[in-house]
Amino acid sequence: MVHDDEPVLLGRAGRTAHITLNRPRALNALTHPMVLRISEALAEWEDDESVTAVLLSGAGERGLCAGGDIRAVHEDVRAGGSASPAFWRDEYRLNARIARFPKPYVALMDGIVMGGGVGVSAHGGPRIVTERSSVAMPETAIGLVPDVGGTYLLSRAPGELGTHLALTGGAVGAADALLCGLADHFVPSERLAALRAALAGPAVREAADVIRTVREYGTAAPEGRLAADREWIDTCYAAGTVEEIVERLLAAGLPAAKEAAETILTRSPTALKATLEAMRRARRLPTLERVLDQEYRTSCAALATPDLLEGIRAQVVDKDRRPRWSPRELAEVTEADVARFFTPPPGGDLGLGDEAPGDYGLGGDGSGGGAPASVS
Image (cartoon, rainbow, N blue to C red; front, side, top):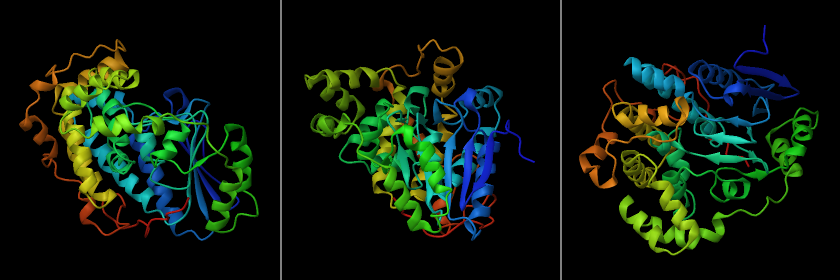
């Protein structure tokens, strides 16, 4: 029996299966049980011939998902536990499963979509944004490196746009999400209910019907900001170090560049340097799975730094927005400090890149799907 207070609601309408993230008071933040439930549902629907597509949405009016439950991470770190690596292991496997899901995976990226919310939406397709969408990977603000495949997605964005978003943690609207490859279609929020009804209707029988239906409800997105900023972004963020990036931004003589520099200087210096290195490495890695392996290393490494606990305290627990980073300055972060983010964690690597595509079942049971759906 399904109860409306369950954190993940599963359902069916026509040939479309529904996943609803159902923690609206917490902006639908993901917990470990939620990740497990979604993965189990996808494993079941992959081989169910009565399911043509999956539709992901969030309960409430504020957004799809604000990310992982970082309060739980904070409590785990304080207790010296191992719950966070276990959560990330299953979360990143879910991200890979979504990317390889063999059917249309329609993500309604309406409202706030951050961190883990990007992970459960932006690896599928077709991905839909609205005029209310605010998409971000804000991890450097809490002492983390972008994860859930975020460095894979951002490293594939045009020019240095992804580097800009990874270091600043800035949120983008619909047009910029489309430009950066984080979404596929713009649908005005007032048309979402009609779109959902159409996807549940008798006209949707196969994957092509899903794509056609989404396109019918789509329209041009309102103008974004990043396309006009490409010149200074590409020039400034092509620098070899975070320090040089900040110098170029401040010397650009543009208010937007100065604002970016000032934002970067509020982030964890250690996380910034690890993030820049992670982005550069992600560009050279051939698959999402290999990048997720790398992100598992960087996330686990962050648990051993003081900045993660301090960043969550400042942003989420006490909300004073005044983190006391250690080290405090970029110049104090050594090459050895950064290198630690790319060494295997004590509990062993994730190992997704060593598995056959689709072998993303929990515990390595091989229950996953086949090739990427690649639908938009």
